[in-house]
Structure formats: C-alpha cells, structure tokens
Amino acid sequence: MYLGTDNVVITGRSMDWAEDIYSNAWVFPRGMERDGATGANTIKWSSKYGSLIVSGYDAGTADGMNEHGLVANVLYLAESDYGTPQSGKPTISIMAWGQYVLDNYTTVSEVVDALRAEPFVVIAPTLPNGKGAQLHLAVSDPSGDSAIFEYLGGKLVIHHDRKYQVMTNSPSFDQQLAIETYWTGVNPLAFLPGSISAADRFVRASFLINAIPKQADPHTIKAVPGGTYENQAVAAVLGVMRSVSTPLGITHPDKPNLASTLWRTAYDQKNKVFYFDSATSPNAFWVPLSSLDFTKGAPVKKLTMAGGKVYAGDASSKFVTATAFTFASGH
Image (cartoon, rainbow, N blue to C red):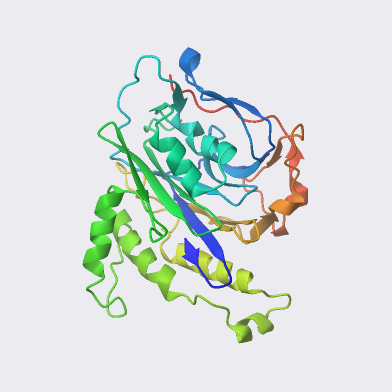
C-alpha cells in the first residue's frame, strides 16, 4: 500500500501460484443475492456495494475493489487454521470471504468492527489443484487505513493500522513484523535479501514502497502526454510489485506460494481505477470504475483474461454480460 501526497493511496498485489488459475475480471452490481456456499448453515447476504474483482479459477474472489475504493486482497498462508464449525453459527467458504467484505463495507474500520465479532466460521475447501485454500486477507481504503486478517490455531487475529503497508505469504503477520524490525537496523542500500522466499520478498517490498517518491516529479509528468501524479505513482507501485515478482517457470513442488508470478494488480483508490499487469501479456490495461454500471439490477459482466487474451489501455468497454461464477463449496 503506497501512501503519497494529495491523498493518493494505491494498493498493489502480485499473484504467485504454481499453475494457471484462469483468472478473469468481473463486474458485480449492487443487490446481488449471495450465500457462503457452505450448505444449509451458510451465511446469506445481499450486496450493498458494487465491485470489480479478479477471480481465481472462477471459483472465488482473489482480489478486488468496490465502488467506494475499499480493496480486498486474498493471499496464501500455509499456517492458516480456521478451527471447527460451531453449532448454530453461520459458515462461509473462504472463496467468498473477500467478496463478502467488498459487498458489505466501505472502510477498513467497518470491516474490522464487523469481522471482530466473528459473524461466521470460515470453511476452507480444496482448490482445483488439490491444495487447501489456506488464505489470509488484507484490506485497505482511500484514507490509507489498513488491516490484516488471519486465522491461526482456530482464532481470528487482526492487525489494524495504516502503518501496515506490506503483507506477503508465510510466516504469519506478527512474524513478518518481527522480520521488518530486524531489517530496520540494516542498511538497505547496501544489502537486501534476494531470494524468492516470502520473507525476503516482504523485506524488499517494505523498503521499496517507502523508497519511491511520495510526491509528484513535475519533470516526469510533463514528459508523458496526459501524465498525472496518480499515473506516476501507479507506475512506481507496479515497479515495486515487479521487483518482488518471481519469473515464470520458477516453482517449488511442495510450497505453492513459492511460485511464478502470474499477474499483478494496482488499485488507485483515490480515483477508483483498476490496473492489471499480466506476466504473460505484452500490455497492461486499466478500468476506471466510473465507466462501469453498479446499479441494482444491472447485469453481471465479465472480462475474459484466461486463455491468453490481451488488452491494452482502457478496457472497460470490453466487458460482456455473463452469468456470475459460483463460489467453490466449503462443505
């Protein structure tokens, strides 16, 4: 999460996985009737807010921003333990967890207050590749507020502070913070750890996100026709994400989070613009949320990205009406 001058807040994310997860972009309007895909005791809701999301396997929401600029990013966490269902308490598939947040809240504080009450028990299904859906969640909003949600030992742990600008995969976030504390005593200009481990990528991202400029460079902006501070900041954030990405073809047979970077996203939360940068495409593209129809009753729309589809520039006109995917069952 980048915090710049002039209320510029941009959240970037990389998706690292050992195989193609057939991601597509989806537009979900307000008023969609949802459930947690966990059977008779599943939680049910109607979406209060529209959102633009990126799917994983078209079976769950991996990433997204709602119309108020709230961003949810779901990442793999091997240490996750969601406990056992409690009698009478609603349940939700973890594949719907991020979407539940985007559908119901506008700020990080709202999310923290609501999820701290633990309105449901998370059920983690097996992913199509046979791996468990062991995930943690980061949320950020246009004010620069941030929170991390993890289930460890069957308990929900929440870290809430705008200073939490970086999250990666393992270890758990409290240990990531300990790693960050250690590296504050090391000169990062002399040495940064360079492996593809999550801990090393955390260190590099933590340094770089605060090393890039926090205000506009007028010379850079003038050199680009139509350039703005926000465009420059998005480019810088994507540069950070690329610098901590893993080249295609590098994977670990037993650790799915130590894998090639498939794609990167960046969300301009001030202007509510979504950017997508595929590791297999020659172009990045963007979608202003102002170009999308989130009104209740509007159609669900899909931008097919799986299968080598290539887009450039503003891709908002390329979305087509589609039937919403079904969240993977948490039975």
